[in-house]
Image (cartoon, rainbow, N blue to C red):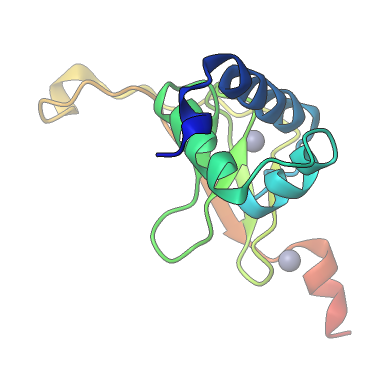
Length: 134
Ligand SMILES: [Zn+2]
Ligand SMILES: [Zn+2]
């Protein structure tokens, strides 16, 4: 923890900027990509600060963190449950344009869990990657 951590005003400005930039895009950027976006506005922000704020925001449910073990974490400024398409070649993630009805977990089948949301991710090959081989 450095001194900057205790300057609450600056911290919230950084967090607000990160959130605002993330909400502008639908590209589901990685933390590194968010860092590049935010640095245009706050040139002195550090990558560590971006990581910590993204962790904080996803912990609060303000943003979504996508990707499981072995894939790079991507962030989504839209925290509502919505289906995603992920390219297994380049890792790109898109929102599905046509909304799907997401399944409700029947209480009897919840095994004691209270389900918060349902993440649906279709894995495939994006048009860019599909076009590369031809
Ligand atoms: Zn791809
Ligand atoms: Zn999304």
